[in-house]
Image (cartoon, rainbow, N blue to C red; front, side):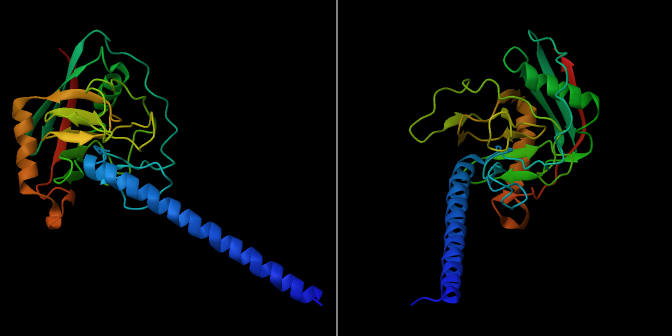
Length: 264
């Protein structure tokens, strides 16, 4: 005959076993999620990976939920506290082209942006540049294998920063229909938004593609680098990643000394 004490112990053991099973299931889910993200990011960067290409581990290397990616992909990992600011009111001419000039310690990079195709993205960059948001910031991530991008736009310089608001994805069909592997080609010279892996999660981080890169069509392509600027990025990429890795801080440190956006 089972005593009440034995029954309590049995129930406790069963409860513990269920808890362990749930923990193991959560670990397996997290592992599968990170594997998928890493594969996409490894293919992508992210970020782009960016740019946002920590390949979708979160950019700081932790698993902050399921939302991050500049990692093997351009996926920034914005702090949860940075979500209080409203998206800036649309003030750019949605029929015009704009130029974003980045003066860096390695040379000038000029990006042509079409507000007709990506009005809210261009508007955000115009707003942030006017506030000197990018001035003095580092391009924190270079990826030299799988995806080929330099990721910038994080005021913290570690992949976790953002402007406190997000902007919607735009122009995602511009690079064509995804192939059987779920990717499209982001041609060398493309500039696109990094994000957290979730729709509409772009902030301020973006990635510069210096060599044709296959990524999911999930990163807003909003600009094209001029020839001289592409040469600057290629020079940085040729120097490699700090410590000889293929994804991390560029060995040739890049600082955006000043960013300006003007109507063309």
